[in-house]
Image 1 (cartoon, rainbow, N blue to C red):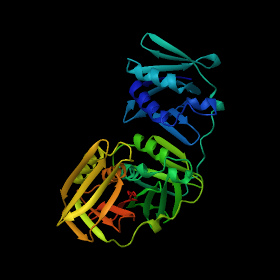
Image 2: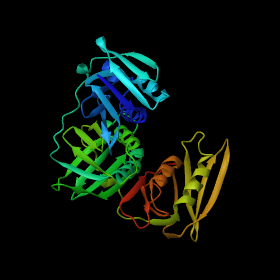
Image 3: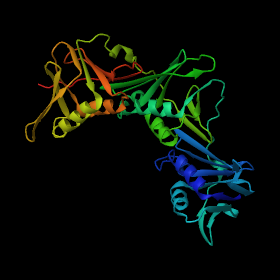
Length: 378
């Protein structure tokens, strides 16, 4: 194998596939990146057997030559060393050549690195996915839907299914739901499926986090293919495979209250900053809890009290308060996470009592919803 490649394109592809490579793997060859040169271009692959990422660098694009292929072939190189080397190379182009016994030379200018490679034949094959049923959505919408839900997945392995985001597709609508049983995040969007298929799968939160780092904020379309145990996201020169979590996701619709006793409308930014300030004193000891009370006409009070540190009380003028008086305590972190995920300047918070889950959402937008369970304080 021998080729000369633009360094910037190589660095970008290496960074993308590195997101799937881990040092904690039982299959030693997976600590490497597989590099395949064909007459069409160069393909890099990284995998940890849960996530696999393939990045293709075409021989030419828009009339510019990106790779000059001198000899086709394949090699696996230690990801840690290879990624560091290409990142630090000073030249605009890099030459790579595999000599006998898998010795690989990386040349730049008059200098060179020699790395010991591994046999690419031994690298596990990527899942073969039949693309019978696929749908697509815009990159920026996919990124937003991940950002607005993935933070609420569980980090505990006691219920593995909750470490993923539930994707449900029905009647050309995608619903993403994440919960760690103390809070829930939901986002819906209209999408186009080819044959009006329906799906109900759970994608690991870790996979979605890595995917959202790789895709850009454009309105280009990304194809999504769901099979029995894999999902494939297919962008322009990128394939991102992830295994699906096994098991049934709990029915979360029961958690979402249908009526409310107290409704508060408030400016999201102002509310977020007040919670942030109150949480400064809530971090010690008792689990980061702040209190919200309705005080009088249109005013809510946010407070936090940690005996050994001090207390803070802050009043906020709301746009409206309807319904019963209320005192409720909740995790400041959960509330701040939820508020950061919302895309509205005005938000509505619907309470159904001091010990019941409450809902937060933009004032005139039903497609996004956050739910938080309150904290008991005695």
